[in-house]
Image (cartoon, rainbow, N blue to C red; front, side, top):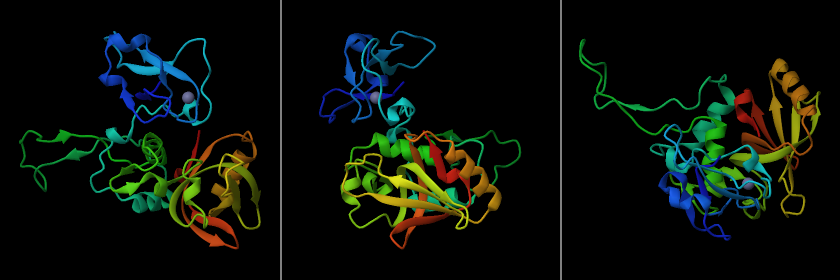
Amino acid sequence: MGSFAYINAARTIKIYAKDCTAKNKDTPFYCWNPDCKAKVNLKAANSIHKEPYFGLVSNTLKHTGWCKKITLEKTSRDYDSHGFNFNKIINNLLTEPPRTSSNTPVINSPTLGLPAPGTPPTTTITHSKPVSISDLYQICKSLMINGDFGGIKRKIMLCDDKSNFFYTKGILGYHLVECTYHHYDPLKKTIYFKYPLSSTLPNQYTVGLKFYNDKLFKKLEKFFYKCPANQIIVLAGNWKNKSGIYVTDCNSKKAIYTL
Ligand SMILES: [Zn+2]
């Protein structure tokens, strides 16, 4: 289920499920993943229990690629971009222990400090701020290639097939990288991945997660070893060039997202 789809094959005009009416329910639209050929249509248009959403038109082509898992139920429009600091979020993902929920609503208090005893809460709930790797990934995937969130361009945040043209000099600094597992090196405590997903794109790199925590390395090394070859993996990192391989230190599984 997706919260939006595209009206045209060129994928330049978006349509949001919440803006549709029952009139739209038989119209086929294009999948929210521009590289997927599947057609979707409006579901739950008349439901009183469920928000309308886009789902696969029955008996047609199936989804191919990340849209099988990433439904873009939330898009960049559904997140609070105020004070967005991409690098800081990536640093948190690389270092902090896992959190239980990524969708904690942000509560904006109009007054600083604690309210006087007995005062009813005067808080308003707004869009949540992105905190997890899946939040960042969903935001990027819902943006057009030249789009931005909180003033940061999609192509700078996410190295995927679409932004491959931009990475002619390697992957350096803070980025999410969409890749597949390649191998691991127990001596260097590093797990290596291949970027991009497509083997025909010009800018091909190996990226690595370097661990300092033995337990975490062993656990993840086993996990990736068992991954299917085409498993899409998203990594958060602050990438540095180490002899032509782009490596980030990683101390948390929060920096890894498997689709
Ligand atoms: Zn699709």
